[in-house]
Length: 422
Image 1 (cartoon, rainbow, N blue to C red):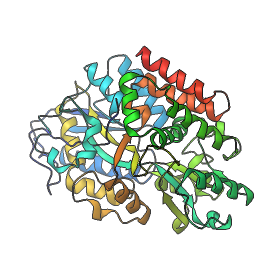
Image 2: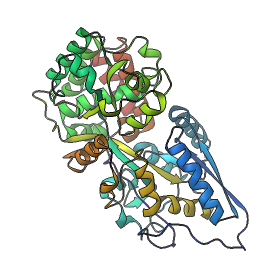
Image 3: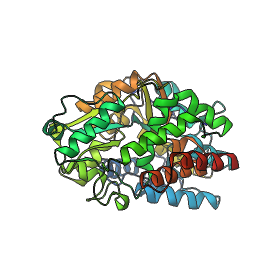
């Protein structure tokens, strides 16, 4: 299943978003209650932002304790998979929607927010909502949406004699060669974590086969089509140039020696990453300041895909089916127009509510927001759009291809076999 990026806002019977703070009045008769909230905000500025918002909410609701549990991205995925397999969830938790959320919904673990969110949904952009909607029902509230593209070091590109960002795959390969020739590591990659590598195969598949082909593959479970194999051939072409930093197969993403830090500290010229890249770069390294630039994934000559098609997703929060009403109320609070505007102002997330676009001041994030607004199509991350086992196989097989352990044909066949077994 391929889904459009989206987000949804909800709130139970407490009025719409608009300009209110979202906080329902406290009641002295309310019993003590604890809401456990798993999120992936382990880096600044959101890490501190959420601590502040939890304090504000608890001050207005002294009977409620919000147990804020930030968990690193990969650790979160493993931990949430473990608890959901046991038939449980936290009260409130991060979700990227798509096939993973759909499986949790089918298992009866996630609260249907449709009726409670009815007065809120009109405040959100349709694109932000769709990844969390199934069968006309809404199962999570979005807080971010964006797209994946290349974040690059303008100074290192200039040093290599690259006068403008590459718009085609041929120009991109030429840029990689020029960067290597100038003594610069062209690309940083967190090979250990695998998910960043799948961005390359997914984008190549989109550019070569076209967005409808990825959607059809979700229906017929056939990734052996020639265009998907060609995506692997192009990725192998890149990997054979050895464009990544030394030791990339063991590198993480947000650690002080990981993918983001390699770019942030000027040790690699670019990374293919989502809209959060500038924030993580600043958190893990020195940051590039005005030397940081962004360009979309290049077109592939002869491909069926439109360069205006974007690949990415957002982040939202789902509510466990057995969560107390306070979980929904806290979600309403942090999702209100006033609170979310403050979240956008941190520079860590992009607008999901209508009319928030003017809040984005960072020039690179404005480019992302504008390209997203003008996108001709949208593909959710493959490791979230498809059922978890299929998404994991995409990540594993693409990582093996980059490591030289699988051929393009073997990648396509492995994904197909897992898809047909689901």
